[in-house]
Length: 163
Length: 163
Image 1 (cartoon, rainbow over the protein chains, first blue to last red):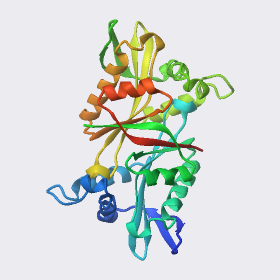
Image 2 (cartoon, rainbow over the protein chains, first blue to last red):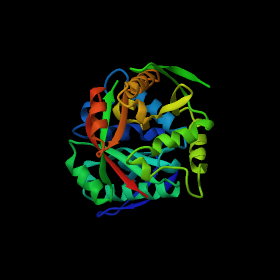
Image 3 (cartoon, chains in turn purple, cyan):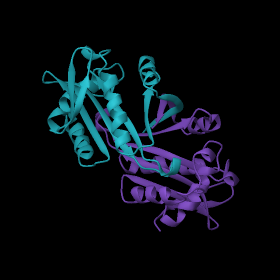
């Protein structure tokens, strides 16, 4: 287990660490426990956990990605993926991209999400990123207030096309 | 040179290929020839081409990234970066991310941009992506019409934070 830090919440602390394969079911539960994620994620059906485990292996094999979990009382209570993307734009800037942020319903508004994103920002700075970016579904106005309060600017339209 | 395809325009064709280090100055010129890019990109100043060349090496060394240029009459007329990002969300979906799209001013509205993005979509499908995504500055309404016409949906807010 690679410990990454301690996140402060209003109720106590959670420990942040790099996810391991055994965390995948808990991460999928967090992804699915969400009005938008419920339709997209879950381990029921023939494929079950397999596509998630394969995606985990891809992330885990590449230093350009960091899948983290926050744990408290032996329970996974939050997850986030950071991906580090080089590019020529902005004078060859490395950018950190945040994907798949989820905080367990019991810990929303506990400061855990804020602590998680502040950690992400610090990690992006340590890796020399010039920018940290994410997209958030327009159906999540409370998430937008959250990111704005952390200093993010909703300067862009986020376009998606399902294949 | 890795030829990737032929792009049809209203004026003729452009050939698409993987960028090489010698293309970097032309790519930077395209990035800078833009109302938003002008303030962010260019090779003047002490650092000059160096940060761009370093970013090129990072992209070129990793199969998860594909920096392309379109060439016609020996001239680079368009560029685009595709990055392939694994993740647990959406049943372990691989997503293709488009960054740094630029078409030379002489070839705007020639169909070249459309052909470039259609090629990107095809490449994302060939690599097994479930999603293709990009963000576009809210100051680019004509770009938003362009992406919408290609089937993209502006479903997300794109948040950025400069570090």
